Amino acid sequence: MGRVRSTYIKRAARELLKRYPDKFSTDFKQNCLALDEVVTLKSKSLRNRIAGYLSTLKKQKKEE
Image 1 (cartoon, rainbow, N blue to C red):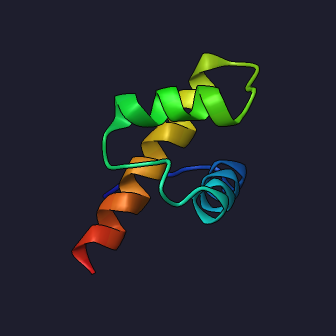
Image 2 (image 1 turned 90 degrees about the vertical axis):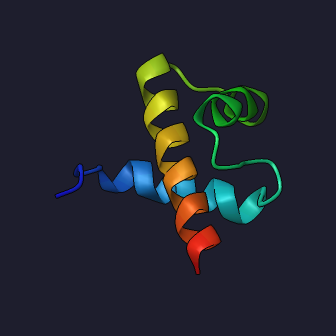
């Protein structure tokens, strides 16, 4: 079983991926740095959760 993510994390990650498809990759650390450039987030934990879901989405797209 996977981890349950909140809807706002998923919505934000999908919107960022739609706007900046070439900015993100499957690497979590690189996604954290890219998020700092693109968006101003108030908390580090929120940034990390979005970056983690972005890497998961990119991995899923890669498999298809």
